[in-house]
Structures are given as structure tokens and as C-alpha cells.
Length: 213
Image (cartoon, rainbow, N blue to C red):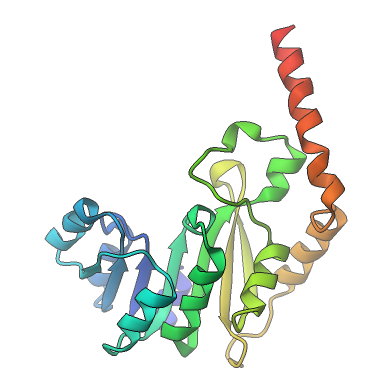
């Protein structure tokens, strides 16, 4: 994210902004920000720091209301929130409504490739509605007029991805080679095939049996 801040120092929007920890650093650099946070008590902590926060769930209806007040984002950040969303299409549909023509949308999520290959069943919990890959996100994004132009690997949560996306109509961001490399890696691992996921539970059961033994 620092490279984006330096290049587009206008308005940053964070989805699930929590207590404003990230946004406070943008504000310190003179960047106008807006947090969108559904938990009112947590939003008040951010507001006490001077951070403007909209108390709402991010989605098409919320964003249409914001767009009507003139909110337009150079950067929308959604760190470790996409997997928590029950209606992922409604969430992503809201992004193009408030993203500027050459704005950037970033997300971070636990990479399902590591879950499957390393049998990380202990990182699965009920608050997650989905476990995501680049392949999956590209299909969802494309349905809502977005394009992934870069991807980074992160060490958090047993291995995560950070995706950088823009509007399909934007020519400001050529596709990084890392996108194609990750796409091939996921395809080679079979993440686009159901049998890979069906084979996950037997691996978990073997680990459980070994542990009990």
C-alpha cells in the first residue's frame, strides 16, 4: 500500500476500518479518508481520533448513498474482510460505484492454495463465508467491471494474497507478470477443479487419526 499512497494522495476509503489504525496513518500524511465500519462502538474509537466513519456494511446500497454525497475514492482498501462477506457479489458490486476512473481497489485474504496444499484446517473458522484464490476473485471482479493487475504474497494467516485491481476501463495499470504466474500456479494445483477440494477432508482425517494415535 505505501506505493499507492505516494502515487494517489487524494482520498482513501477503508472497508471494515475498525478503530482507524490504518486510516490514521493516511491522515497523518494529509490524505482525506473515510472509514466504513458496521460496529458502532469500534467506529466511535476511530472518530475520537478525528477519522470520519460511516457506520454501515459495505455493499451496493451503502455505496450508492455515499456516491450521492460526492464520495469518490482513489484507493479502496479491504484487508481480511472479503472472506467474511455473506454476499460477495453485492460487496464487489459496490466498488466500481465509488472508485475513481483510475482508482485502485486492494484486498487481502487467506490464500486457499495454502489451506489445501498444507492442510491448514486449523485456520478455518465460522466467521469466514469463503476461502479465496486469485482465480475465483478474477471471475467475481470481471462480473462487476474490475480487473486484477497485480498480486503480492503475504506471510499472514499461514499465507495470504493481496490483490490490486482497477476498473476494466482503466489503462493506467498494465498487468504485472506476477498475476499470470499466480494464475498458472493455482491452475497447476487444481484450484479450478472440484476433486482437489473433495480430497481435503480425507487429509484432515488422517492428521486427526495420527494425532490421536
